[in-house]
Length: 146
View 1: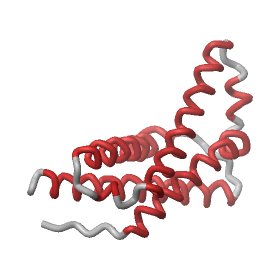
View 2: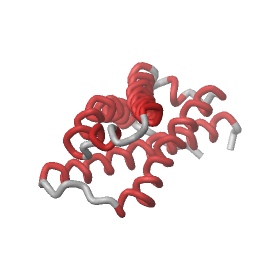
View 3: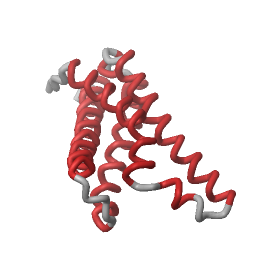
């Protein structure tokens, strides 16, 4: 069985992940007023929250950078390609599941730009999850001769 994943889809996913990393501070400040909420925490918990925010932002950027620079390597059906695409697939699938399971119970500001942005970001997260899941399946097919 052969699975075709166009290189442009992989590159778009990489660019999209870098975009999410770059837009992340804006979303925290303008949409969620995150820093004012974090200020209500104890100092150590403030730093933990900020650190995890930076981890998320950093992972999104690095996953995008790796994807753009190593797009062909992510399809080479090696053990490393399986490990890397599996990690990124699980990351984005987890994000999508979290988004679906927990975020609908929270209210985002009702400005039109935020509503459109919410749909756009959810679409991006879905594209990332599907792209890396397809890459993982493609790599497993070749590596394990399925």
